[in-house]
Length: 239
Image (cartoon, rainbow, N blue to C red; front, side, top):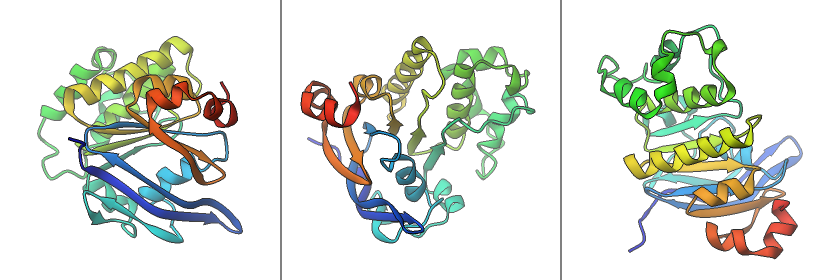
């Protein structure tokens, strides 16, 4: 039996001035799924995440979280509903320690004094546990990405939205991050949406995929099928 969608996007459109970045995008992400959103620069991938999380206004369409309409919900309220957004580059605070960065992720929670989530994140990311007292400026690129993901997990999200987590990372580190996301989903049941230009790597670790081009969905399906579809790969994914 197919899992019911946790996140549903219906006919979503968004613009920057006269430029339409999203043009009637529709997709559904099942609970516990890990999904890739792919496409070239300017395809609308980042705008999709920003619009879903309330960081950018939509001009039409709806965003549903577990059936509830959150289209007009401010970003700070979306967090409390279970959305966690890790932007391109991660956005960790270099001057703060690993532990301080992580604790920022749970500040809004009423039970923020509960240490269990912090302990779980430390267990998920052993390199962070080893460096918990070090400033984020001392971390490698891969460790910073782990820190950004770990900080998002401190809020106990229902769905994790990641924007280009492989950006600037070496191929080996990229594979480690992608594998970590798959392992995270398998261990916790977390729903993950992975926005990537590294299409081959993303499709190798996700269940389903959507391909955007000029703000529209031009292909969708099982990741294995997209990976083997020569026409889609050559036309939109660059490999």
